[in-house]
Length: 203
Length: 233
Image (cartoon, rainbow over all chains, first blue to last red):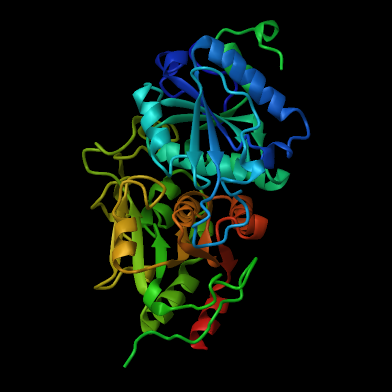
């Protein structure tokens, strides 16, 4: 396999077979915290966890980005929980080798550790999933793209705050030949890595 | 003698009167004009070469020119950004280059306005309607966000700018990315809805809405008229 099937607007990754390799890939999951996982109404959290479990077994690095604001922030933001709020807690179980990266903002790259850890592990191809598709995920995706990471957003594992803005945010990714990378599905990614549907780790 | 207007002035904005801290202070506020370059809104530029409707990205030029005149009179700091790469493309990520070539508008390729998205070329220049004047800050950026790999944050800090009002193109790409970066860094941000445009009108509308979600997740949105009347007092 040289590409993930049916990705929009181009066959992902841009570098084909060389880039379609678990050892250079990370799954970045934004906002899988108590505040936002309750937005899941159609089993997206189970899809994310199942996809992460399968990808982890192949050697893909799994990254959970947790977003929580500082109590000292000048602007009293309403959307991010304080780090001390119970609903800032990660709502998924982490496994050995997983990365959990805290950010005081929407963008997982803001504090610098995410970029450092990904580069240290040689992970320059990123799969995006998570909550707050048009806010948390999108901000992190934009920063990854500017830094040269080759990014694929998994539409069936990206949960928006609102359906319409979520759909438009996915559409924006695909403008101008893939301005922020490409959009695909969890099933197609797993298939591209040689996993058949029956072999996927069931949620 | 003072050049700082300390009256409590806010702008009628969505979802809250902007700024949150209640006073529009010219000494601490900058107008940020994003990527008003021929490559994004002029004939023969990058966006035109890709086949998009230029009227969408040019729609905000006239109101932006009015805002520029007003804030210059009011003593605001004005900042312009330009997206572009070094002539040898050594600062262009290979996947960005590949995608641009695949859609038929390769970065660095020769076009009607010179080499696409390359610094110093005619297409890279800011269009005359909203061009910088002497003394205004210009930030050159290799990506979509104006904070990444630039000195923008340092310029804002050094000039004691805490509040940013955005115009520019395109709404859902470079404007949104930069506004998100600014908001995450604690800057109080306002986007002028009629001073921006995107290559897709529905994506433009969604980008405006996303700013205002959850009480103003990335700041607020206002019309240029609302800003002009607030400045006029």
